[in-house]
Length: 304
Image (cartoon, rainbow, N blue to C red; front, side, top):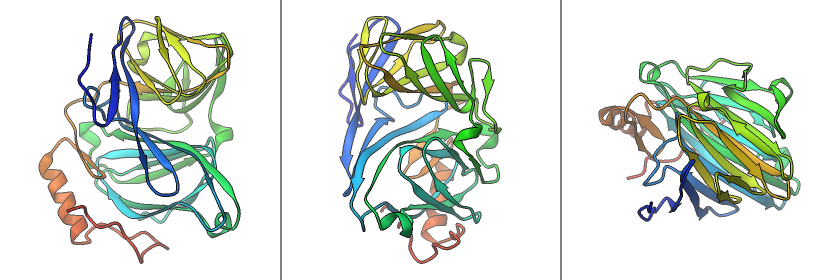
């Protein structure tokens, strides 16, 4: 089977258990690079996941850092999950939270939220690294206009367990009989995993739609090799086994129940309604969203 060329992410010919292998589109945004895996032309979502970015690893000299000015979201949950480094989150609900490796910072936009992501003054004073994944999840139709919310869960509170030859950390949702220690309206699984060298991990069919992103090492799935910075989207309805190469594989597992209808993505907005996105654009243009406490002086203008 062959696939069309994808401007967002390259699509590779696959067979058997693997529907797609996505290679990200890389973009240099100044002090570091971001690799966007999807949305892609041939794959707009996996379960509720509608956006998947891999940022870094990047090294910052003193005085250099992240400075994402306040910007709005609707209709989604967003999360930045770090392997290395630290980012300071501020939002229009009044939360000020340092994002650190392995912790959950779960921001639900619902009817609308504004946030910024910065490097703290303390972090700016020293040389450091930054490496992580940012995801967006479309909210179910009945919750698109829910109240915005923010939840923080330290790494130590997340379930960590072994399955087959792998160590797994459950970030959100439910998988392998374990629930995450916080509730979400989204039906999903999201895990960080490490498969032993030449070991294997079987993903059960009941996980729903499933994707495997390789951070380090490599895995083979039904004869298809998946390399670092690639994502394999798997066939539904049957268990699938991941086999690591001769080095330990560091991977992310993402997916869940299929979306309950089409979603439109424009800038930072996700909605089942184009009219709702137009309303959000007008609200941001006319500053009808809330202000970010402690970060009120700047904002990202609406793209025109």
